[in-house]
Length: 188
Image (cartoon, rainbow, N blue to C red; front, side, top):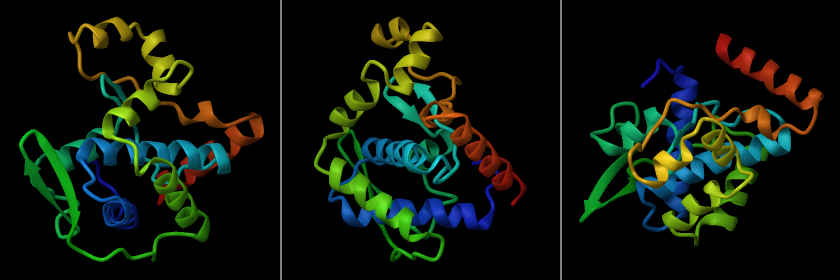
């Protein structure tokens, strides 16, 4: 995993815990999609990143590579926060520590609740379909980069193409605010 600050690790870990506490039987795929949707909706509403992590265009939708690795193997960064339970071909995420709201604003808690309310009853497959919909950031980038046919015929399952969250900012002022926050985050 990238060298995240202590605050960024705590925020990621507690976001994962929050979702794992509130969404029964949350699978790795569903969790990764919820994290992506959290970032997308937060940027749409506030023009600033929530977790400020990169999401790449993969066959199964937007994926943060570091989180995917953490949830696929024995956790290193999330050690002490979550555990993985593998059942057949599925990996489920269970919290082993209580959620701490120290890193979160009221707006951030509200947005996590919004994501849970709107998406917790969706299956991982339904979430993948949602983030793949025509016009979505994933779809537009995959189409522009020529990845759609490769994903469709299963000759490629990941790429290094990144979701540009500026896509969700409505105007130049929003983009400027987003860039300013990204710059600030990179310094801390």
